[in-house]
Image (cartoon, rainbow, N blue to C red; front, top):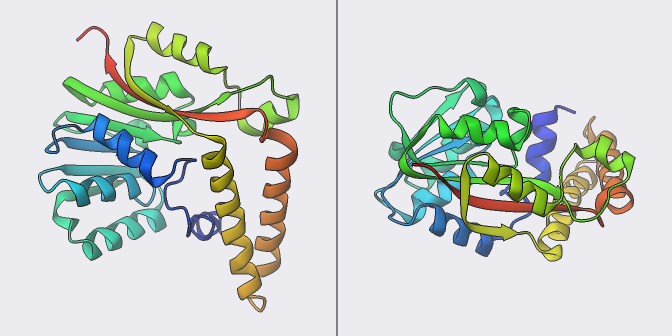
Length: 245
C-alpha cells in the first residue's frame, strides 16, 4: 500500500500526528501564539492540522506550511477551503530543511517532524533561520522515559532522557517558556487510534487489494508498540524563545 495513503487512513481518528489530545494542542498554541495575529510557519506540516486549528481560532493570524507530500498538502488545502480560512494559508511543496522565505515568522512550529532535519537540534537550527526577533518556536519530539532496549533504539532513534533533552536545548541557546509531557493516556490513545483506524479500514474493505497488507501492518505496529517501546518512550512539546535575542 502507498505509504501516504496508509498514514492518511491511520490518522482518520487522530488528525494531530503526535500523541497530544485536543486540550493539549489548544494550550500549546495559546502559549505559542498569544497575540492571535502572528505569522506562523509549520515545517513539516503534513495535512496542516495545527495551522488549520490556529487559523480557525484567530481571524488575524496568517500561516504557511511546508511539506513534501502532495496528498497531505491537498488535504490541507481542501480542509482550509471548507473551514473558510484558505485565503490566509499558503502551502509549499518542498523539503522543509531547504525552505526559504523573504519574511520572518512570529512562530515556527515543527511537531513530530525532527526526522526531516536529522534530529531535534538541527530542527531548532532550521527554525531559528525563520524567526523574527521576539518570536517563538513550538517543537515536539520523543525522549526516553526509561532505559530503552537496543531494539527500541533501532526502531525509533537515538533519543535522550527528558532532563538531558532540556539541557541540550538550553545549551543550544533556547529558553523553554512552556512545555507539555504527553500523558500515558495521550500516548496510548494515539497508538490505539492509529492502528485501530487502519485495521477498521482493512476490515471494512476486505475486497480491496491492499486490505490484507493494511491489516497486517496494523497488527505489526500495535505489537511493536506494546512489546518494544510502550514502557520506555515519551513525547515532549516545548514552546521556546531564543535565550540571547
